[in-house]
Length: 234
View (cartoon, one colour):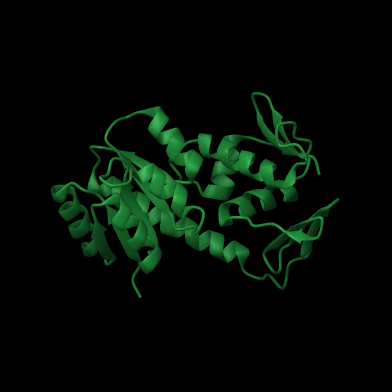
């Protein structure tokens, strides 16, 4: 079955343009222009991807993303009418996967949509059981990652990790002691075609620290190597 995309946009002309181009690519498209209704609709239909404007009536796109991220991991591409770093950083901070600044070309949007679906597929494959895995479990003190089951434990208690968090932590664990640059992590974890910028690595590192570090503000496991990147100590 074709992927379902929810467009959250209140400009009628842009709604129609987005719908036409995405449907022409074979996607099933649902459109909503009101923020509150869009939030309810997203939870009802559980789309495979959301394209969402920041400025919306009822509830803005940043708040919708913040609420949805507490319940679902659906990829979200945010649209902003201005090239404002604050908008982009806030979007990444609360869980958006990518963003586009208006005006943008439909070719660029379609490329970003395809990249998100490709990334989601790679993450899903990475989380599948791997019966031929030489080291099915990674253990570092009270932190354990079961690669067969795709589960992570801290002090034998299960950790709730989003797919990208899991994949990032796994990569760090598998390369213990190595200094990994932000660009390297973006290429290996997010994919070579990710265009959201290295800021998203910092955001996800902070989320991981909050989950596995005794003192997230003074990390001892995931260390920052100034001017170079990050290193997992164990």
